[in-house]
Image (cartoon, rainbow, N blue to C red; front, side, top):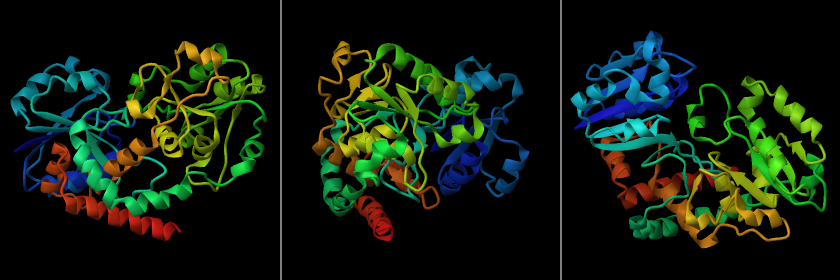
Length: 385
């Protein structure tokens, strides 16, 4: 079997910590090809990243150099010879860390995306990876997985009941006071994406820069709606936020930047539990909102599953919000989705086997995998108690 690792936007950390263990797991059972770029905008690799892999002597490496660095990340089909190379390899399975979905639609064989497995509030380490048909299909579960979901609901019954204590993070009645939010006004929490140049997934966002999103919301939403912005923690470390901070300061009667230490998940987790609605697009905050039963409003272009009951930001009915009550996610479907996700999709790259990978690829996962994942989650919850 031929397996192609197609890795245009893999960071060096992701490569070493998460992708290499997968390569080692498959090395003796498949013909492996790796198509990756040289280091650019903190994606790709250098010679130093290959040196520790000398023992993986059956892997064929295909490295895109500096000349095609940008196209490789954003429009791989435009890289001369790339599609011809993939056709020559003719992979049975492509495992992709890529934001460029259009190019992958032209690949032969089965294509799966390698994504982060965590969906808050569940802490799932070491089950940190998943592979899926389409990235950012929020809450999507195929109809044919219904029977599998039933098995997962049974296996994760204890985990789900214990997760109820995460529904309302600390601060409870004091959350508005802690963040300096006004009383008597509806609060829309606005979690911002990671905006570093390495995040090529932002090519799919309508508002790649948070400051533009906040401006849009200030222009279009009822002036009584208060915006509670939670910034990605890495933005505060690596991205210039002067323009965003100035905008928030100049509109302090309508928007605040919310930050807090010592609470798992930070401000986003607290706001997703207590706010009147959560704005969603590509961040993980949608799962916090679904778990807490908090209504969601999605930016046009986002892809939320029907059971999330999310309201489009362009919906004319929002002109009457907050007087009109917004729907929240279906609680029964939320339970089914999360149990299915935890039981069948996530895995530890360090203990992966070829057989287990193929089960995840097919979506037909054995009871032993479901029970193993459930046991890991039960142990983590007990340690956190």
